[in-house]
Every structure is written in structure tokens, then in C-alpha cells.
Image 1 (tube, one colour):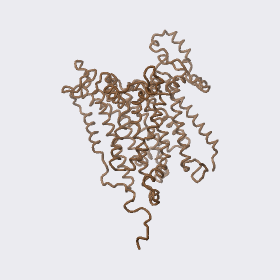
Image 2: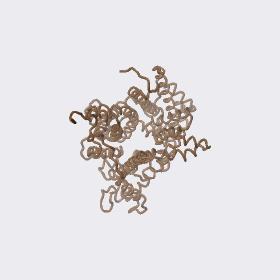
Image 3: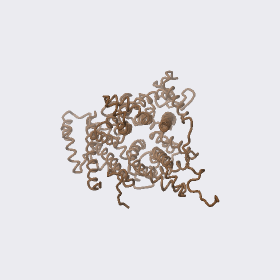
Image 4: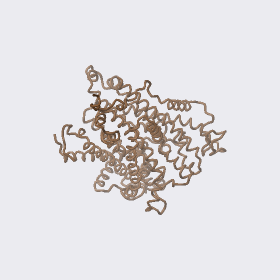
Amino acid sequence: MRRNPFLYGLQKLLLFLASMLLLSVTVFYAARLAPGDPLVAYYGERAEKLTPEERTQAEERLGLYDPLHTQYLRWLSNALRGDFGMSYKYKTDVLDIIGKRLNNTLLLGGTGFVLIFALSPVLGILCARFEDRPLDRLLCRAGALSSCIPEFWLSLALILIFSVWLRLLPSSGAYAVGKARDWGDRLIHLLLPLTVVVLSHLWYYAYMIRNKLLEEIRANYVLLAKAKGLNRRQILLRHCLRNILPPYFSMMAIAVPHILGGTYVTETVFSYPGLGALSYESARCQDTYLLMALCLFSGGAVMLCGMLAQAVNERLDPRIRPGGGMEVDHFG
Amino acid sequence: MDERFVLVGPRPEEAPPEPSIRILPEIPVISWIVLAVLLLGCLCPVLPKDPAYMDLAHTSLPPGKAFWFGTDAMGRDIFSMIWYGGRISLFIGFAAAGISALTGILFGAVSGLAPRWLDTLLMRLTEILLSIPGLLLVLLLQGMLGKPNVIRLSIVIGATSWTGIAKVVRTEVLRLRESGFAAAARCMGGGFFHILRWHLAPNLLPSILFMVVMNLRSAILTESTLSFLGLGLPLEVISWGSMLSLAEKALLSGAWWMILIPGGFLTAALLSVTSIGNGLRRWLNREQSNL
């Protein structure tokens, strides 16, 4: 039973599109049925003072009078042509706003993601190699503590120590005024939020790797490798690590919303101008189209990562493939 | 004669370490004590001072003899607020964990026992739910339910954290429904809820108990995060999170006791719940493997 790569891709694509469609419907109705007034987002405080006639006019202009499904379909047909609507609050195209903030979030989330996934295998392997020795115990204790401290409180404590008491690091923003292009300045502003993002997620993944490795080193092939004369380091790195790679990649995919969600809180506490702070703001003040675009963006990223992880897993471990286990594929 | 032969295979002293067998399961004693102290303290009806009373003559005092943990910017006694607020934080934690466990078990069981197409649909739905960052989901739900109070907040947190349990329950149900006893029960005319209650639930319990404890932890965490951001409980309803919502102002004045003390209690509670959960998992797994 050989599967057709084209059909397989098509199936995945359709699934992805259907999920996105469902997601957009859900967010649209949830945002619109929630009590609150989109006009407040548009006019701010002035919305209270509008006369009834002005109100009607404004609602008509924004298309709020049509039934909800007409509004949704209008948004959908525009979105298919690449126009995701206008933000009520900023009065510009939502993609522009997202584009401006995306860099900051990618910098924070991306650096955090890379650091977490570079450091967690190191910690996991160290713990597994020295299982139940002092080093392992120390790391486990410290890790459990670090993963239990709430992100927002860790941020506050770090601000208190490094910004208020020691006056070493800035407490908010992504760069000092007028220094948007200065990378050194950006790095200094990134330091505290990045510490929070990494510290609060690192142990979760390192601990998973540790436990998977501990299961792995009790398997029989380790005995064989040992009989062959390999030393511990070779067995751990060459054999055990390779076996835990597929779950590791799925973990990376699950980590995307996890770390993304983490940057939301951190961004808000540090007033870091990223997507997290933006979503929080748009959900609070009924900025429907901005919220939809943000949800679609993060949801899409998460789903894509999930599919990517699955594809990589299938390459690494032929047994997962839908075609069945016995098939041998000729890949490099 | 013996020297001619080379020993092939692992030597006895180099055998891979056996999983260390302890007679007593590891019980995280310290965590249980911490949790017990916290629970007793929070349930204790006698507080040294009225936590809601605003003593305007003594605002923002550092810890001292009269006010053990100091006072906040509104002159409330932090020591009393800690115990009173813990009551609400822990209540929301337990309520939300209960709601999420019930929803997760029902959803997972329905999905596992349903026909293939319904199962696929339901699992897609949970995946979509998982793809929205948790904080946004809470915001959306809260917008629909209206102004947050203790009960509404528990419902919102519970309703957004059941997906993990649902997935595990579904996998277990798929495994269990192949088993003979489920088929036998159905042959004898057992209904859906009968099978769920008497045949599936006892088998599911070990695998989800750990997740429920972890949900308790994340519910406490979510409540404090939301209240801190000003999205959860209002300032006059005292919880560990809402005590911290004044923290930004405290940062400016350098009032460390308003930040570090409630946060310390919060972290202690989270840490003890986590290690109890981990201990529980180890203990349950040990039993399973011995059977």
C-alpha cells in the first residue's frame, strides 16, 4: 500500500483550511456575542457621547447593522482576497499592525524557543547520566522550583531586583526611545523577559527528556550496545537519544502554543510591544477583526507546527506512517 | 585454562542499574505538611484583623510588630489578607479542577465510544481549542459570561482546561472498549452511563488522578494570573492574585513586602501541589507495575 504524496498533501491542506475556517467562525461569534460595544473600541471614550443618529450612522458605516452571518461572510470573502479587515482601535489594516509587532514577539518567543530546546536536552541528558546522584537531585529540585513560580510573579521579582534595587536593567519596553535600530539596546531590554520565558518553561521539557531517557536506558538494546563495547556516552548520545527524537519533535510542536501563551503574560507585565500584549488589548476592547486575525495567526502557526512534527516523525520512525509498518521507503 | 576465554557481554558489576526498589513509596512529606498548614490556615475562622478593613492611618507600612506582614497601599493588613485570600484562591482551584475533570471525562468517554466520524470531529474540535492560547480563550469566555465573580471564574477556568484529560480518557477508553468486560457489560444491556461509571471509571482513575492534581495547580495559577492582569477577581475580592494586582504601584515605591509575600505563599502552594501530584503518579505507577 504505497501512499500518494500528492493526495496526502492535499488531504492535509484541506484539513488545515477546514480547521482555520472553523476557528474563524468560532472567534467571530464569540467576540460578537460577547457583551460590549465595538463602537467603544472605535471612538474610545467619545462613544458614550454620540447622539442616537450619529450612532446609527457609525454603525451603518462599520456594517454592524447587518445580521451576523452576513457580516461574517463579508469578512470571509474579503479575507480570501487578502484583506483581513480594519482594526477599530488603530483604524488601519490589521495586517499592518500585526506586521509591526510581529518582529518583537518573534525575537522574544523565537529566542526563548531556541534556548529552551538547546538547553533542555543538555539538562535531560545530564540528569539521566547521573541518575539519583547529587547532580540529578539538585537539578530536579531547582527545576521543580523554577517551573512552579508563576510567570507574572517571576517577572515582578526580577523587575524588583534588577530594575528597582540594582538599577541595572530597564523594566519595560522593547527599546529605549529613538534607539529602535540599536541591537545592543534591544538585547538589554530583552534580557529580563527572555529569562522569564526560558526559566518558566525549561524544566518542563528537560524533565520530559530525562524521564524518556530513563525509560530508554532500561531497554535491552542498551545491554547489547554495552556488550559491543560502547561506552556510556556513546550509548546515550548515539542510541538512546535517537530513539527519543520522535516524541521530542512532537513536544516541540506542542511547545509552540505553550511558549506563545507564556510570552503573552510576560509581554503584558514588561509592557513589551508584541503580539501577546496586542491580543490581550484587542480581546478586552472588542476589536473583532484584529482579534480574529491574531487568533488565526497563532492558531495557524500551531497547526502548521503540529503537521510539521507529524511529517518529521514519519520520516524518523516508519512505523507511524499511515501506510503501515512493513513498508520500506528509500530515503537518504 | 580460564585466561583463554574472554568474557563476552556485560560484566556483573557493570549491569545497568536496576530500578531502585524501595519498600515505602516516596511520600513528599514536606509538601503535605506545607499544604496542610496552608489549608488549615485558610480555613481558620479567626483572623488577627479584619482583612477588608482599610486602616487609612497605616498605609504601606513595612512588616513590623503591629502588622506582621505589613500593610498594603489601602491600609489593609497583609497577614490577614493572605489567609483570607488563600481561601478564595484554593476554592477556585478545587472548583475549577473538579469542573475540568468532569467535562474531560465525559467528553473523552463520548469521543472514545462514539462512531468513528463523531470521534474525529470531536478530536478536531479539541485541537482547535488547544490551538488558541489559553489566555485568549479565557478572555473570550469571560466576555460571554459577564463580570467575573468567584463562581464564574471557576467555570471559565474549568471550561478551558479539560482538553488534556479528555485526550487521555479517550485513549484509555479506546483501549478498554476492546476489552472483554466492556463487551460483556454491553451484552447484558448496560447503558452508556452504567458502563462509564462501573467499568471504565475505575480503570481510568489512576491515569487521570495525576492530571486532575496538575489541573488544580494550573487553576490556582490561572486565577492569580488573571486577577493580577485585572481580568479576574476585582480588587475588593481578596485572593492571592488580586493582592498582586497592585504590584505595579508597589514596584514604583519599592514596597517589596506587597510583592514578595503573597507571591511566596502562591509559589509555596503551587510547589507543594506539584510535588504531591508527582509523588502520586510515582506511587500509582508503582502499583500498576506490581500487579
